[in-house]
Image 1 (cartoon, one colour):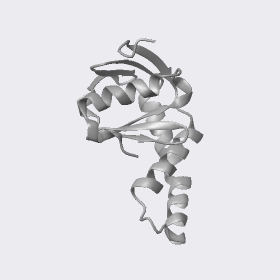
Image 2: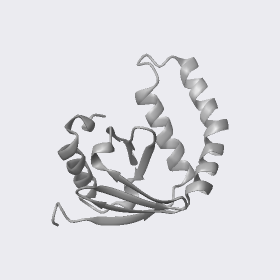
Image 3: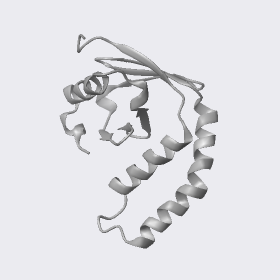
Length: 138
């Protein structure tokens, strides 16, 4: 497989994977490292009451997404229209158990691993690293 070859995929986000990604992201980026029990309780209560509503709203607003990725960046086609993003706009890649999260300056783009073919995670990481070597942590 040519490491520079573009690829595309489609995704419809699932509530369970969205909550799992949100929980992992909060636990690794926002919560203090000591993770006291009341912080965990607060996050779990918040996720249980707020995040499902947020997911429903975002799913309605965005719908099914089609991504086109190449060495310059990606285009996300959704209900809101196409959005073109250069790899230089990716501040950080977060690698979690079931998905990666691309942190942009004003939003995040989750990519579940289930929609990627073998080698595509590594190609995304290489493309981002080529533009922003500091974006590879976590």
